[in-house]
Length: 280
Image (cartoon, rainbow, N blue to C red; front, side):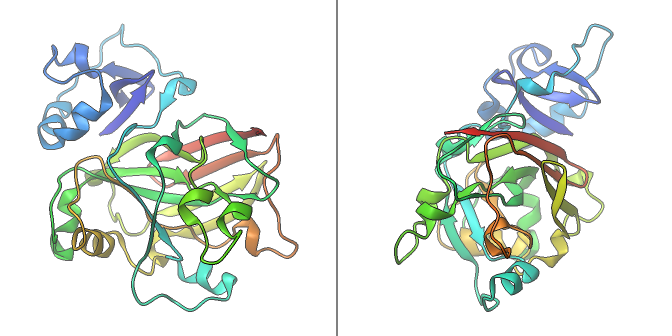
């Protein structure tokens, strides 16, 4: 099942068609995407039987907003791919490195990215959407708490992030537009192996990141167990699970985004984001 935010309205995607949730459910589920996410189990059961008719409209991808537009929490995980740690010359962490992105940074699958400086970097990431909340969730049960996966870009202003010691991770990663998310929330049952998905990023047509989520140091289940041991997870919470090798700041010479660059982010079974960089 593919759940989307189309012009601010909760929608189910069936191929290239868009089913409006509020209208199709007769008002059982509201137009606000957060309403469906807050009742994920009931919504998921209803959505399995959504019907597409001849007059069901065709999706215009420019209408896609973030599938979860107002999460209560957005976690980021740093240095969570082995090859990324190696390229950065850092040790493999012994526990998840956690920061936050402010929810106001989230944007849609075709949204522009206004650059805040000449030191802005890309980071394609698998994003986990919590569907069933809880505290102290065991790793063995963690995937049953997942509504699904999205693609995310953890856009990062390295100048702000590393302007001082200690670094300002949350500030450098939370400018408006620095969290493209989508194109849809794909339910967890859509993946034969949700821990082994091809993930890639192109910058203006050049492949810069290509890996598998199996290279994660801490897989999704372990991240959920770790985070829920500290705070209650709630439906709609997002976990940006880290980026693979190939970011601009570890290259020689370093490479950063510039106005006119197009960031294309892809994850197997989810789709792609296409975000154009603009002058801030």
